Length: 370
Image 1 (cartoon, rainbow, N blue to C red):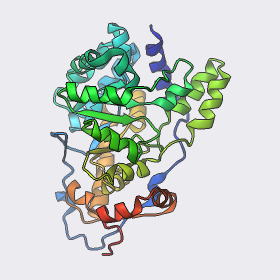
Image 2 (image 1 turned 180 degrees about the vertical axis):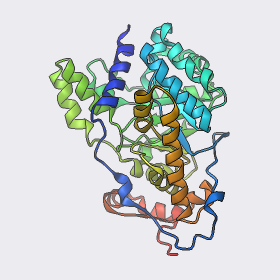
Image 3 (image 1 turned 90 degrees about the horizontal axis):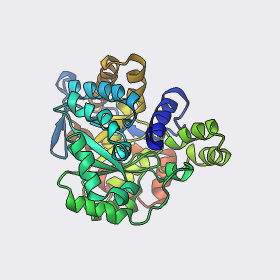
């Protein structure tokens, strides 16, 4: 078993068993306006969403989680069954381990085997683009017959890991090369510390099809590294994880705002602390096309070893979203994206200091009163 494969199962079990969620709850700073007379039938609310030319029954993606170790195959199988049953999207974990050792390919291939009709995206880290090139990207796409490729950015985690790849030179050029060479949509996703306006602008300039903000507010892989470091007696790694893991980064709401106020349109996925349908509604009112989450689906997948509880959780989030839409008078997710939203607290302070409040007002008319 190679080092990458071993790390995958260690991280997965830590996320399932330890406290790895940061306390940041940026969604508390966002308020949707209650519509006392919605004048719609809740039963007619439609959650179907178009994303990159694909139709999803819910505006939800099961976020990248795992693969690359024999014990992860069953988890991906369960998650894929839920995705196929409900018509939601799904991403696989980093496929680096399968590029290093083909025996791990099956833990990823199972996703497409089980979910032949679902929107599935492949996944590779930005540093691996330089190592494996376009050929490596084509391999991970072919491996699962992916509908898109996600390039993940996880430099905080890499900086904490003793074996981390911290050479970030040339990554933007490599992403541009992928966008030009690959015919599939290219998504760039952060993994827990957010994407700023400036980086989003650069990503759009090189041809990226969508941005997953992956903001601060949910599972922190940097915090997971604290537990790995402790188990291995790595005092420096443990120290760095504690220092940076809990509160370094751009909160999901702020990152969604920054990516949405760009002077052009690019689809946004809000990830990071999405735990219920209200979080989804708020994210979409701020401009996200979709939301994705990992931990809410990982725990039932591991505990029950079947798709039933994962399906139940997605349906629950969908029903919560419908209630939020009903109470804001929105029959479709398109209407929800135009809904009035009030931003308060720390998020408002950050957005004001960053100079984005006026841009939000222009795009969202947040000062409008019903």
